Image (tube, rainbow, N blue to C red; front, side, top):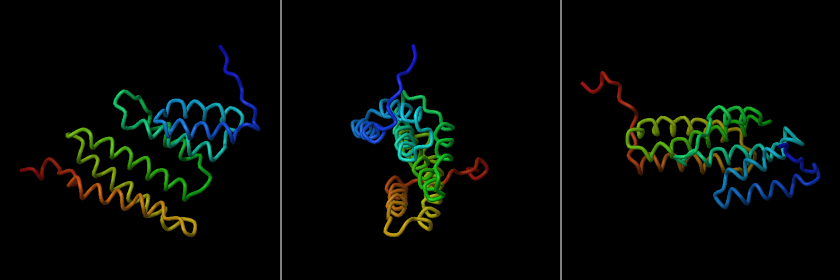
Length: 160
């Protein structure tokens, strides 16, 4: 079987559908729609953002087999340094939040949150005027670290 191709003029409407499926917690459908858009406009930046978010939506799903390389490769395709740092931060933050669900991974969650915080700090310096998004994400990570009482990993030697 072969895929059918969407009309390039329908991208805006189709992208709205992808956003709707994300809001309905159906990232697989949003990803599929993004792939249909990429088939006719491989560098569509708005679609790339939705695609990255839909991929990272799956990080917390235990049955999902999300490939981190697919996310990082997609982030590299973003045209702006600001967006690359911002979405790297989101990826790391979502990865950290998924690690919180596993008691043995809490110290790894701390490290991922710290990496996300670093990306948000860089993005904040590059953000367009009146864009508070990196600040909001940064603060959310800090609050989660405090609320969850997360600590850095102790080295094996430090335990004795």
